[in-house]
Image 1: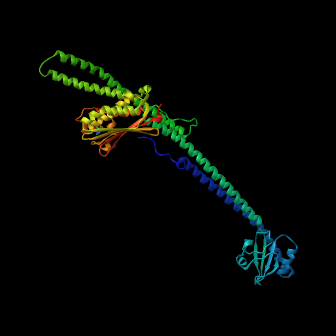
Image 2: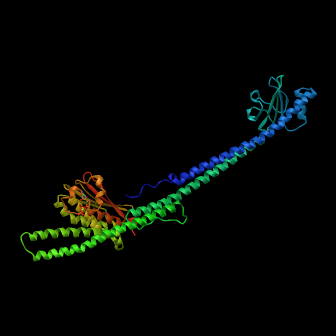
Image 3: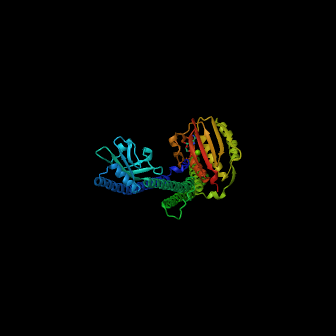
Length: 460
Ligand SMILES: Nc1ncnc2c1ncn2[C@@H]1O[C@H](COP(=O)(O)OP(=O)(O)OP(=O)(O)O)[C@@H](O)[C@H]1O
Ligand SMILES: [Mg+2]
């Protein structure tokens, strides 16, 4: 019945999960953009290098054809002209015939078409050059001509793109997580505010409303909807209470007059059997008047007007006194009543009503716990909550009836041979709610335990 539930971790809120989803999308988008940039930049570099080395190869091939001086001589001549390219004439045995760099046989075997190779793969290059890109041309006599260009700018561009990617990725990740955390915290706070209000409403204060913020967002719309529903509910409840109270009130006067009339008639008329008839009629009217009195009391308590009379009450003293008062009657009924009451329990409340609530529960034990031999009153405070238990080891009630017996006029079959109207628990529940608390019946195996919680942090 109490809307509590453990605090949910922020990471499990819908807001955080939504933020994670959009974060994943942003990261995916960023990754795609970087793949495209990387691909485009690399293509531009490659095409540029490939065109240069392709041109150099055409030049050398046409020189060879023209001057017939052989590959090695032409390579030396071309290098002498400068131009910044790397050349290598490698003989069939793998030795360098002419050139300003060289590649080991393993690289040579893989070098087909335009390729990029790094120095660490065994290339002999000037110290400042880390990688080259170029082409291999194989001659029929077994020589291989390599023409390549420094590919360091290509690697540097790739490294720059990778670093930018890491920076952008990290920033999106950090900002995404932060915004997810903030969204989750805001959402949690707003849901907590709604849950707190609903708890107070369930504790009996139907006048509470869920806070509505100025933003007009989905929470505000939900809160406004809840408030409209609560308003309607409160009106209906008040209506119902009013009607019940009016009926009880309006019927009480004619009944009281009828009672007076019967009383007078009993004195005036005598005859065989008449006094007994009058007595029975009077007893029935008294019962009806008692029921109306009890219903009006419940209506009064539920209306909450008694809250204005709240004053500090020593619950411990009240319970001790009640235990002492009831003990002889319990002993006569063969039930040993014990009390285990924490000292110094106080709360703001209506002393008479609290006494009535406990008396109703003790009366129930005496009346309904047939065959019980023990009963206990226990009261403790944990944190902001006072818990009060009245337990017996009688027959108890079936667990599925434990909520129904709080409805007005509900009495279980076993109780029918005892006097009562089925209103005692309704009144007790109304009194507990008036004090910001609740009441429940639990199995005591054997017997029944009535548990009352009063949240003293809600005291006004
Ligand atoms: N300690 C108990 N052991 C077994 N049954 C119980 C106990 N307390 C309550 N009940 C059951 O719950 C029903 C409702 O209790 P409630 O106090 O509302 O009404 P009542 O005692 O029958 O009448 P009233 O209190 O109006 O004089 C009882 O009729 C009884 O069947
Ligand atoms: Mg009762």
